[in-house]
Length: 314
Image 1 (cartoon, rainbow, N blue to C red):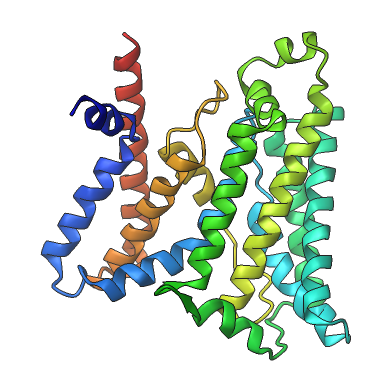
Image 2 (image 1 turned 120 degrees about the vertical axis):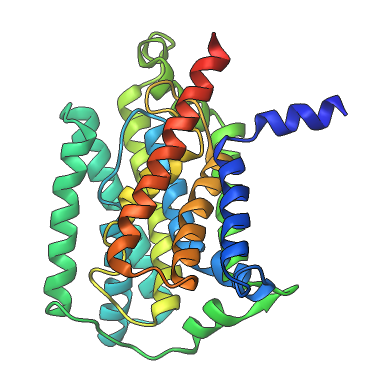
């Protein structure tokens, strides 16, 4: 019994708000609480969740990467663009992911060696990457037909959508990196005590660059998943995802100041945002009101989480 209580206390406060919102939407609409709807929620959450895993790594270093959404859109565009030029689709995917790793490396280099605030550096990169995507597509969607899209987006394994399995694999990868590797320890050290890291003979600059490069890799995988969902290269498909990823990460309990937190809590944060969006659509709330409602719920959850953490330290 004590073990169960300890595990329940370890859950981020947002998990309880998640349960409350599910109950409210279930009472508001008889169509909400169904297996098919929860399956749709998981599918809808998958690309953003992978982006949020990348953002979690950056936030653990006391930074934010505002170019992650642009990188996802860029991947959808680059893959289709290269495929239309005759490059095999699989090779196009590898090239696109390598390019996001390069983008992340540039971000990390500017932040670490240029001593530029992450918010400023990655905001500049966001605009550059967005511009490239728009130039390659002339501002509209581009298409390249392939069975691969539907295989990833629609196939299932053990009754679970393939996209969800890929997301689960990304979660395992990031969790292992953060919890079981020296690199993950260094990521937390960058956010917790960068001076101590340097005194231990570990280069904060190199590890910060590697963290942004790793985030770029994760964003590249999210871009492939997104392409398979929308089946086209769309230069603005992931616009705003970087901010949603920040909100989800903070909702999940990752600290902007202490290098504490992880991707487990981030899952709850992404699910909260996705479930609220899904529920508002089902009960028929007009889109012009949805952003205000979602923002209010997210802000309330963050405030409640902060209050609980403050009181737990007293």
